[in-house]
Length: 341
Image (tube, rainbow, N blue to C red; front, side, top):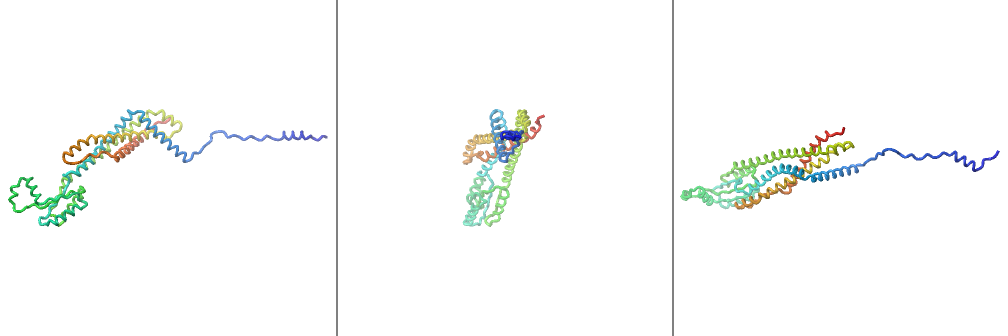
């Protein structure tokens, strides 16, 4: 029997060996996880994109956008002008001679050195802004000129009028004035203290009336601004209804859909507040000349105070907040009603 050759055994061994299986490739979708940093960058990027888009849409239709912003500006300029007018009114009263004052009648037996010391003490008082001393001779002369009884007063042996101190208080609040008057009455140098509380009460009531009127007007016109923004954003939503349906079909959330409209409301409010500040500033500039001429004719250097940076910041920030709230109200009502079927 023949032995198998080496070539024959090698060929048999090659036939008996099985081929190794090939590595299988994974098929289908691969789930990828996004980190917190990626989500944050995507959220910030979308906000930046929507803010830029809102600005582009605002300036793409300058006439319509400008009309809406102008309506908001007029509504905001009215209470702002009234409040600024109250501030200038109070400043004008601070330098007016007819502001509240306290008349302090001194004892006729008081010595001149004691009167001088008492006068200097009042001038150093923090509650007293100004002290004017009227001697008995000056009081008599003024009485003769104002009353027309000069001849009758000349026949008197002694001057019946005492020395008077006219005090202009630092604080015109009613409680402070009463406390200051009572403190003066308790002094041994005073014979009588006269405080014109009726004038003070009228001034306080007039100021309070103006403040309440300004606050009420501001609330009413703020509601008007909200209605303007709500109606404008509602029209934007209706114009982009098909776009909203498409993005919702591909899985967009309500937050994603409402974001551009919220930025549009911010734009309307911000530019409306900026225009309101410009309107008030222009009004003050127009009135500054006549007011300065009127005050100079009375020997006063009073000038109107215009709306500065605090007014600009308050108007733009407050109007932008109103625009945001109005846009949110419009979006919350109308976006949910737009759903793909």
